[in-house]
Length: 499
Ligand code: AHR
Image (cartoon, rainbow, N blue to C red; front, side, top):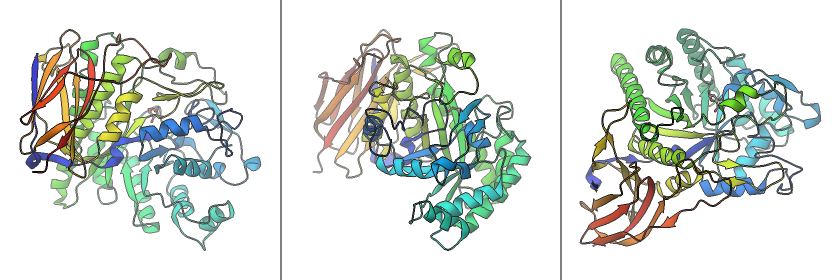
């Protein structure tokens, strides 16, 4: 098979917002306790954070992390997680039917986020609470001093404000499973008034309103329209959430799910832009795809869970090779929409549907999906070039025309390098990829790696998976040729010649 990609800097998608490589930590399962925080671990630092986890999070270079939920936030009192630990109440968490000790809270998370060099996207509880709790939390986090909540923060050890810039107005409020689930009108009004008050406290913040929890929600479309009708003037982003799974064991169809993500993004953008036109507005609402990943391996674990445990094993999907390939195609899809998707969060980061896993006694390890995310985050900074791509296609039960090749190129910020990300979805054939330089000048290949050769169901529990060099890549006269193995994730970096 042959496929091609033509580069042309005149038709770029956008300068990529680095927050597209964000992630998510929820107070659930073992994400926090025994995940990022485990004072009795041999790997803990003096503050009780796991150093092995910090190192791996740093490798992923995650610029923003959403916190503290997720479904959890819809029943959470943020005040429970501040002040002396001995005074913090144990609470029932109704979202996951566990016990939250509150040993770890806001200050602990803010400190950890600094250790991993990440900003925070803070979610407020619009399930059981509302405007008052949200504005008080914002005052606590961002107001310098001299008021009740800002001085409480200082008293609790943080003299300087946290200056959290990005805020989520609730979580998945369209979902009947959500504690305090609302109709679109109920949520829209609450988000509008909460957003208004929050921007009065701090006009520099950015707000994300809840869109649909999935493309197949029965309220999809109507939900977005109604929420935008209420909140358009207050918010900056609308959220999307989507999880995938290969429950039918149909790899070809599974690897095509990035087309579903593409449809979802395109659909939500159409609704945002219709709302803009209807209001004759000059303001554009962008997207925050603030939960996306594979989630299905742990279905039985969830069903078997016994309620009211502290930090039980929940949603501990063990990812295989095909999951990593799908994640690669989803990352490319997000990059293709980087003109409007400004924030995206791989959900989640540690232990709970996560690229990083820990065991209580052993060292943290990388799941298969760690590798494509790490490379996209490292090399996907700069300008996404419009993919002018050709590829043979195949058909699945869900999609008529699935390109075997999924690809995009990113021009680095210093314009010295172009990086091509490419997935070959074919299980049988390798694909000869031709990349033509367009209006760029290729100098030489800086790096060419492939993630290939594993059984689709193989996992990385033994730590054997690795990226290897692809020697079948060459550049000649502004044309690059690369052999992409069947079922492979590929990253090729080309040094550019300015002359
Ligand atoms: O990430 C796990 C859960 O998925 C989140 O709590 C919720 O927002 C979504 O349904």
